[in-house]
Image (cartoon, rainbow, N blue to C red; front, side):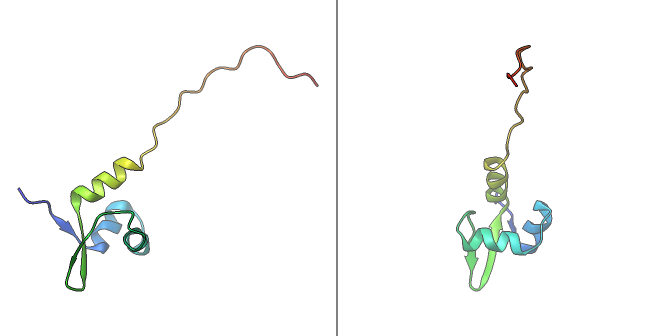
Length: 71
């Protein structure tokens, strides 16, 4: 099966950002893209990899001990 190619506008919509953000990712080479003539496309899998690679897992907050700092 082929991986659908998204326009910059479609990628921005999926990321929930303006078009400027995916264009900056492309300019900084922070996301894989395909150049077809003067058109730029982002593979759906590349967008999913970018999201997975930049997802931050929550941390577990530990309870503080009963000791307090001296005044």
